[in-house]
Image (cartoon, rainbow, N blue to C red; front, side, top):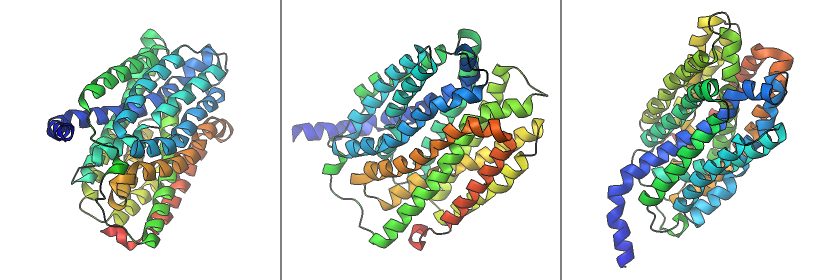
Length: 397
């Protein structure tokens, strides 16, 4: 009893720094998965590849592991505890990033990146449920967390560009590895957890199985299409921007800053959408955001220069704006005792399938060009609209 009281007393004072570290972890999670994409051109030259497209498929293992690892991560988060799983995330991610920096061949790189994906897979099914478990405004909390994650994407673009230019591509993996280890040390000192979530009392009334199954099917399908768009854009935008902006900008560091600008502006969409989710029907919002992506991708397929840059900002606003919906739906429908498992199952399916985007990105662009890729993304957005239209009416509440 004395131990339980101590935990309860300490928790309120530590909620803010714990939440801050969980948001930093989200930024770090997305940053590390995109370092390779930002530096692939330089790495390809050093490893003896004539084109970056030929090296890009070697990153597939990272994204496949990112999805597949979410299932055991979610199960362990509920049954063993979210705090110990987050410690494994921080320390494991740091060490695996250092291993990437030591690679000298494409297959060594593939294996090391896959290990990065294994540890990165822990965050979404564990960190986000830990963040929202006591919030009364889940949309807002998820929106802020999404902003943090996407700022990590922006940081990946600018930080990698600068480090590659001045210190070499290996430093772009070493520095985030150091940051991850330091965050792990801080999290070990700050974070508290009284017991594993699976051992806690229920906090949510059970929903009808039919409505729950239908909602989960829509969540999984829209998450899959959303992750396909996310992987195609975040892994391809660096080279896409280089292709469409060649006439006006050629310096890699400047292109990195421009790409970071796209992500910074687009990232705030998640905060706005998060607040809207707390106020308006999810189905209506998701339909509007998915539908807006279609004409923007089509227009971007024919654009060049600064016109393309403005369209890139616009379509990334709606790609990022679609991200909070899946986590908000899980919070709305699933009891906290099993949220990590539900999130893990959804992530395994959606990220497992969408990891194909990383594998196909290089060959698709090489064979058909970026015009075809952008039109393909417009078609994927159409599927999202159809799936969102199937969302059950209960999701409006």
